[in-house]
Image (cartoon, rainbow over all chains, first blue to last red; front, side, top):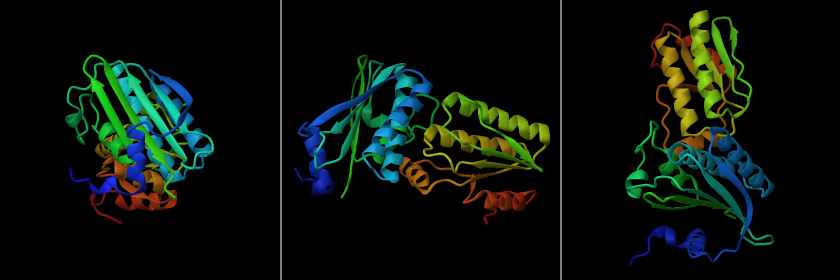
Length: 159
Length: 125
């Protein structure tokens, strides 16, 4: 297999480590998501943590926008679910935040289609999933029809 | 959460969005803005988003729709004060705000919409 360009470099290694669960994470907070007010709450909680971790404004804006899109997806498509937020272990040389969004909703029939910009099964612009994928350094999605969906996003400091 | 203030100054409706509205209050805001334009016959609408730390796809669509509806009712809209991080994120997200005029400050926005009154809708500054 020919490695793609993004597999090289530090960010690529971090993505690989995340994929393989090689980064030690500690659970920071969990927010149940079932109402539109919960979307605001989830955003505020992630914002507070990212301020505490001293992420720059742009990284914060990108991640919180993705949090907004992904929690709205839970409310609209699944009715309820949960956001769980993890942080790299204290003292870690890699300041990293990871948010996991889970629901027991109907699941996604075709993930590739769902990830296409402009595709929507609700009356929206269809930018939630495709956009969130572009907004964060790490994006992972898995879904089983009739069982639910799990999306993970992560962001870390570049320097 | 409390409703967003809507001001009318001269023939202009000004909406300073101070907090992050949830979906319901954002929808309510759209209705109230259109009502106010109808009641006052305002020819200009200025939405000040300088206090907003994030604008997601839902909010950007709602803002764009509000602008389109206002135009149908005869009012030109300017979106003013968007933070650069918010603008960059919207571009990343793939949001297009076609047909929405933007300005850096409230003052620029006032100049923009007053120039647009009765003129060519698609003209740029």
